Length: 421
Image 1 (cartoon, one colour):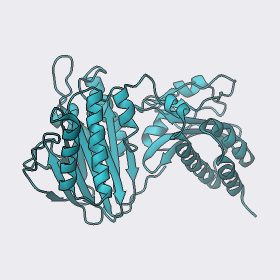
Image 2: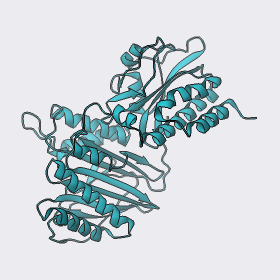
Image 3: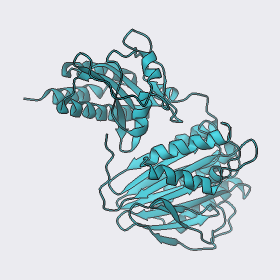
């Protein structure tokens, strides 16, 4: 005979195949109720990771429509930031209480044999959103079922979001430029992890990105990485970046090596713009078994290596010319051997050249120090990058003069890596 947990998860999975993302809250509530789970609320994260946004049609315990919740300074936000299950102060939680939930208080006792929990929705290291649920009092089996339910809800959201304009609208807080529209639909998710590597990426200005773009993909034990910074901050810059990523992927999937792929990008941009546009960039391969990094630098800032809380290497080389001028290569492939636990940082000039209104640059040393300090605090790579981008935005009082992109890669080798709650 199937257990309550099996019936809940199996029934929800079976009923989800023909459901849209708008159907998920009611569908999850229906199948979770027999297991003793009530007051289900599903939130997704906005594009800039500043708010948790409720899926449409949901209401709180007193019938008020759900509103967005700030990720910083709330209990729900703490669960998101720290990737942990957090218990709310009250079992019957109103929208106002969810928004105002203060941090730093001791975990409250269960009320009337029940608990109100905020549970992260995860896909690997990608934080998809949050699940709020009222459950029976403390019990290991119940806690296990809650986490399994959250895992399934996360997968369901992911399976529905790519073809949902409802989702695309929910996660935006303002209008997006044409260039940004194209580039966000081109790039992979900003988080990925397996047992050998953790990848994180962040990019601003989210709604007005011009020519910055990143890409990564896994093929067996090889992680392909690239970052590009196209000239300008207009639709032509976005097109240049799009050509760069498209040519890179096209050649990669045909088995073309890094040097030849960079030359193909050079030729594609020149063919389109006649040597009036260009892009700098790095194309790299990381062997996940051995930790050997191989790359070609086309006029870009050199990657950084962070090891045990300090910068141990700046991977400076003789860079080849930017792509788009047809000037060819001036250097070959470069190689570097990582150690387990090393973190690679690829970045564009908007990270270090971001200027305050007084003209003070954010700077390379501040960038490195920020990452090192968060690493020492045990902060995850995705959360470190979220806070880094917020810090850069604050440095420029919320108005970036240039695109700012960072791609972080932590290599763990054969060491087992797990994201836990």
